[in-house]
Amino acid sequence: MLCQKCGKKAAVIILTQIAGNTKSVLCMCEGCAKKMGISESFADEQTPEDITAKTKKNTEDENLKCSSCGLTYAEFKENGQLGCGDCYSAFSTPLEKVLTKLHGSTVHTGKLPFRGKQLGRVRRDIVKLRKELKAAIEGEQFEQAAKLRDELATMERMAQSDN
Image (cartoon, rainbow, N blue to C red; front, top):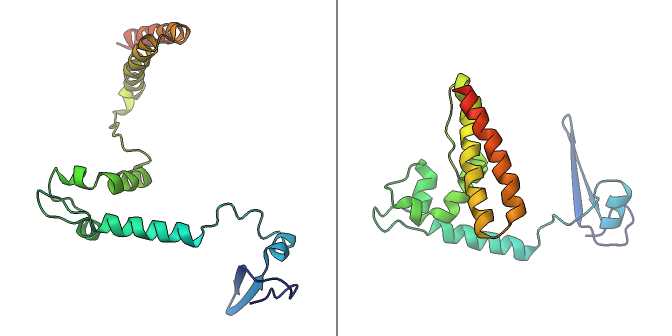
């Protein structure tokens, strides 16, 4: 199909407009679409190979099966419930994607009562800083370790004053 604007190049953009009960379709080449300000970049466009690879991966996920309870990933998607604790391991890759999409993370941080939120955050930050400090020392990043040590001391003073 040729571009309906210039009539020279192949149409790669299909613009569908619906106004009230009227539907209009305009097929354009990349150049004409850019001139109209419709498309800035096709960097996000998926190639047929990308679509095929994604479809193949989704099919592989659908065929996953828990060796303990026999639940398939397709059945999990249908009813939203895992069959046993081993399902988490069997479906780890697709579950990671689902949890990240739903919750923004795969790590559960829990909830705190309103009064304890500030102290809870400080305590979580202290635990995190201790891990970072240990890693910096083991990696012989002593300047970073010194900064973390000072920050940790400040946080620990904050936690002591709140008690």
